[in-house]
Length: 436
Image (cartoon, rainbow, N blue to C red; front, top):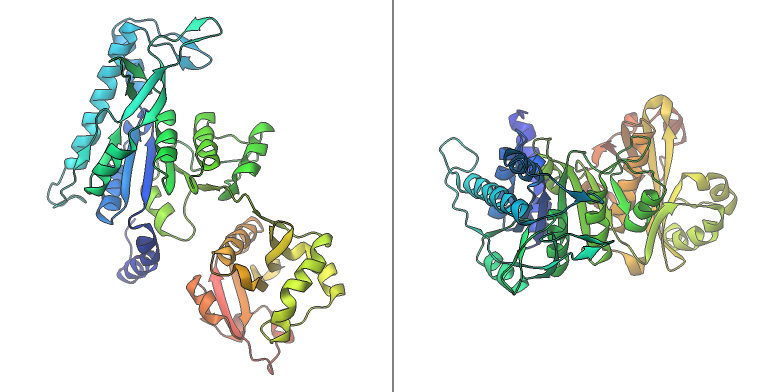
């Protein structure tokens, strides 16, 4: 995609907050052997190099299943699996070592490339790998001996952190080593998940052949809390691969703040997910104590209590209990330990292809923690579902916040006809719009 000069400048400027936010953070990136064989893989490598250049501490975990399958077939070895897990005998282990070593060399070579006219021209990236994953045997399960198939016992966080502190990219393969000198075949999902947990990574980013996490109706779930995702998984309402879902939910449950799922087939998916407001894939978060959900009639009292100080100060237009009860289906709330700490309403004007964002409020004790941004993300998702193309807001004192969220100034003429007729010239609210 070629951007016009103005669009390129605008995109670069809009990415600056994310560049600052990600600098010095630790990201674990996970992709399977299928991604390595895809034509888009060199672009992924370029984007990983860019993250490193921007000061992100990057750990890359690769898989090698298709490459192992190829070598097993070439050697006429019978591949054996139990419950979807490869049984790694001595012959198969040689294929694993061959495949993993080949893939690792390929990734290292791509990260070293600095040809003129290439995205990595002039870059000097150091890639470090080694015996950073300590493994243990999977053992005998259900009477089946998995031989040299193993599980992660320990991640050498000190060794990895030393490399990251030196500005290196750390590359982990789907193999581990034991204190007795044995080599074990590991799943790259296990390696990535345990590395993210042990390193207390800020993000786990999983590359998939899906754009993200999809429900059974084919809807991409842009942002979802882990408990909700696990409920959908148990109900069979998610179509994304089980191994990907397991990595996302296990890492978040163990304390990784955010886990992302993006496509390895889409050029620029990594950068779009990390440096734009909308992203491109799915984001899984925990939120033990706070729940973002649709408001119910039982929430009316809590919303009234939340917005009362803002109404008294003139920030919000006063709403009666009766009006709020009639409009409760338009409201979204964030609840913390039973108390409503944030809310917003979305009023649709489908005939005009737009919607109004109104009554945005956050409790004074819980401001400055991106709760307004969470609500706005949910509002945008709802607007997209309703085939709404733009959102408008009327405000008197919080214009700066809406500008920070990407809204642009507009005049009264941008409002739908019904809203124009109700515009209060005495209040003289400013109008802002946001494309969905």
